[in-house]
Image 1 (tube, rainbow, N blue to C red):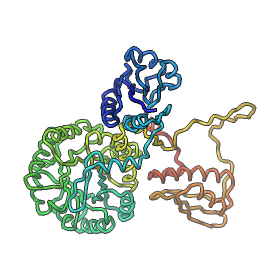
Image 2 (cartoon, rainbow, N blue to C red):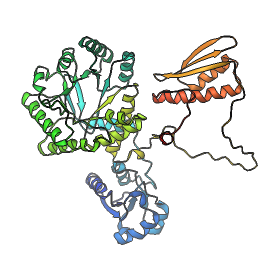
Image 3 (tube, helix red, strand yellow):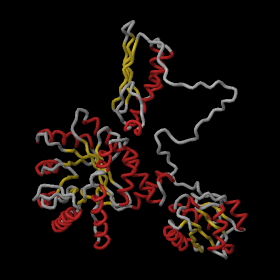
Image 4 (cartoon, one colour):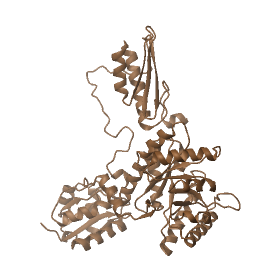
Length: 506
C-alpha cells in the first residue's frame, strides 16, 4: 500500500522543528506531509484521550489523510486511537532526527504500529557526524569544525608521567599538550616535552604555557599546538605560522590580566583575529576562556554568542575552544556526568575543540564518550536520554520485590562481627587496578594480589588462606567497593562508610 497524504501530530514546543523536517521529507519523497500542533507543551503530554478530542477540532477533515503519526514519546495507544478516530494512527520515533527515516519507511509501504524503537547505533551515528564535518589542518594536524569535535588533553608533570601519557593516548585525542608549571626549569620542561613527543607519537603534541620562550622551545621541537598566545604576542610567532595551531586567548598584555568583562574579552579577541588575518595565520583557535560556575560562568559564555554572530554576519573559519576541565575541576565530582552536561553547553555555543585535563588518565575516555553522545543527540535532534544508552552508574531496571507470604522476613540493622581471623587484608586501588595484601598472622604467610575483578581476587584469597565465612563476606564487600572505585578512576579508602553526596554534605 503506497500512501500519499500523511499528518504528523506534535506539541507546540516542537512544531517549528517538526515542520522543517516534514518539508524537507516532502520534497524528497513526493508525499504530502502536513503537521499539526496540539495545544500541549511537550510530546509526552499527548494522550489517546486528548488526541481523540482535539484532532477533530483542529483538523476537521483529518480522515482524508492515509495515516496519522503521533510522537513516540506520547502515551497514545495506536490501536485505541485508530478505533476512536476512524483513521490509521501510528507512533513515530522518539526524536525528530529519526523522523525522515520513518517517513521514508511509511512512504515506501513499510507500515508499523510503533516506530519508537527505530534507532541507529551510536557508533554509526558518530561516524555520520564526522563524515559531514569540515576540518582545518596545519602540517597534518587537524581540528574539526561543528558538528564534529576535537579533544585536546593536558598532562602535567609527575612520577607516573609516561604511564599517564599512555592512558591518555589510548583515548586517541587530537592533541596531547604539556601543562607548564612555574616551578619547573627550562631544562625540566625540555625533558618533559621530549618524553611527550616520544610517548604520544603519532598523536601531535603541544604545550600550554604563559612563557613565550617555552612556546618557541616547543615549536622548535615540533609541537603542533601552542596555547596561551595573545593578540599582542602573535607577531612573535610568524615564522611558525604554517607549522602549528595557536590557541588565542583574551590576555591583556598592558595590564597583565585575563579580563572577566565580556566586552574586554571580545575586544582582545577581535584584535587577535585582525592580527592573525593580517599576518597570514591559518591555524588559529579562539579560546574566550570559560570561568567555572558559580564564579562567573554565565558571563563567560557571552563572547561565544557574539563570536558566532560575527561569523554569521561576516564569515569566519576559527574553531572555538571550550574547556570541559574548567567545569569538572570546579565541581570535583564524578567526571562523566559533568562532561556530559558541559559538552551539551559547549555544543550549543558551537564550540568544536574541547580541553580536558588528565589527572587520573580516565578523563579523555569519559570526555570522548560524553562528546559522542551529545554529537549524536544534536545530529538526531533528541535528548541524550532518548538515545537508549544507560548512563547511570549501576544501570536502570525494575526493583526486585520478593513475595514475603509464608516466608520469615528479617529486618537487618548494624551487626557487629563475631569471628576474627588470625589474619588481615590491606586493600588499595591504583591506576584502575585493585591491590590487596593478605597476611596470615599465625604462619606469617603473606601474599599480594593484583587484578581488576574484585570477586575473582576474593575467591583466590579464600582458596589460598583459611578464611572464615564472616571475614570472606567482609572481603567481598570491600573488594566490590574497590572494583567500583578502580573502574571510575576514583580514590578508595578501606572500611570507609559509603554515603551519598546529600548525606555527606549534611
